[in-house]
Length: 338
Image (cartoon, rainbow, N blue to C red):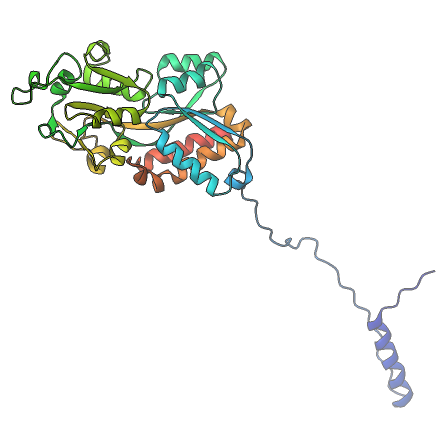
C-alpha cells in the first residue's frame, strides 16, 4: 500500500515527541491535528476577456476579392475608401468599374456579377424587381451627399447664376446663349453631359425636366459621356461650353472652372445639408444580405466604408451624410450580417 506523508503532520508529531521526552511527566503532548484544505466548488472562475464580435470584420482579418461597379460620381469616394481599406491591412483585390448608376445596377441586379453597387440616385422599382428575380434583395446604404454642379470655364465672363427655368432652356431648346438672356453672347451653346446610364443624368433630368429626357437629348451641340473627366475637358475647351457632374470633379478643377449658383444658391456644406441648394442629392452603395453573409470581405468593406467615410469625404470633394443617416445605414448592415 502506497503511503502518503504529509510534511506538516510529520513536523507536529516530531515536536510532540521531543517535548514529551524533556518535559514533566504530568504534561501530555497535544494531539496532532491534521488539516485539510477543500476547494470551494462555487468560487467564480478567473475572468476571461470576451471575444470581440467585430474582429472578424477587421480589414486585416478578411481575404478574397470584392467586385464593385456603378456611379462615376460615387467612384472617387469609393476609390478613397478602397485605398484606406488596404492601408488598414486588407490584401485582397477590390475593383470598381465606373459605368454609371444604371450600368452598375444592371451588373448587380440582372447579371449578378458584383458584390456592391455604387449609385448617385436611389434604386428604381424595376431594378429591385430585377434583383429579386435572381434572388437578391438590395440593401441601401447612404454614404454621403453630392451637389450636382453646373460648371463653365473660367474663360466664361458672362454667367455666374441661373434659375432652374433658365437651366431647362440651356440644356434643351436654346440654340445660343442670347436665347436664354438677351445680354448674353449670340454664340452657340456647347453642352457636355453625362451618359444616359449615369445617375447624374437621371437626377438632373428628374429635377430640371420632371423625368422627361426628350428635351435634353434633342438639344444641339451636345456630347454625352460616362467619363466625367471627358466632360471636364469639354467644358474647359471653350468659354461657351457648359456641363454638369458631381461636385468632386468641380472641386478637383476649381482653379480652372466656375460653378454656377442656381436660384441664387451656391453649393456649400450648409446649403447642401439643408437641401437649400436645388441640386443636392444623396450618394449610396447597395449590397445584399446573402452576399454580406457569404463574403465576409464584402461585409467588412461596407462596415469600414460606413464607419470611416466622414473622415474622408470632405477631402474627396463631397459632403458628409449626417450622423442619423449613417447610424441607420449601420443598423441595416448589422441586420444583414446577423
